[in-house]
Image 1 (spheres, one colour):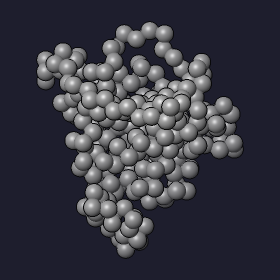
Image 2 (cartoon, rainbow, N blue to C red):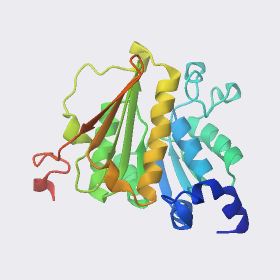
Image 3 (cartoon, rainbow, N blue to C red):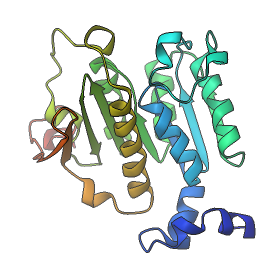
Length: 247
């Protein structure tokens, strides 16, 4: 690290859980963020500030006025712009040394597979089960750690899936009907921001070598009661993604 980097990240380096070795691992890391909305906004901003060397930003949507209530990486002047491009500009203002690569079209499965294979970690910041299942399957195939977040109304959840499981699909069946959306049900902005921040925390824990503390842990947050619930998820031998029959 350069003297300027040592100064910039001094507060993190001071932590025994990070140190100079952990900070160097962050600087050398490549993280794929799929979705630059309410979850991806704070996650991307904190990962850039923390010193992750390369962030790949995948989102093909445009910024709308209704996004600004919770998608804090975007500004009023960004309305109508592609979210990935808007996010890149904000991240450059936070940390110009962080390399940001924009993927502002809808990646097909083969493209997504290549991006996941090239990444050290993937953040699932999407808002639908179809995308979450696909990301989970490809990440487990490539043995790439995946941090999945979700939030709706006053509720949020987060889980990190590691090679050999348990994975996201150990928790949820693939055939889900009547999927709820924030557009339908609403969302309190700080709740989705909190989950996005925790995605960044868990990503940093994995990238600095502390991933085993997160294996098989699903965390649920209820802002109405201000309560957290921590659930231990067992690996499913019959899981179609990470089960023993798939190895």
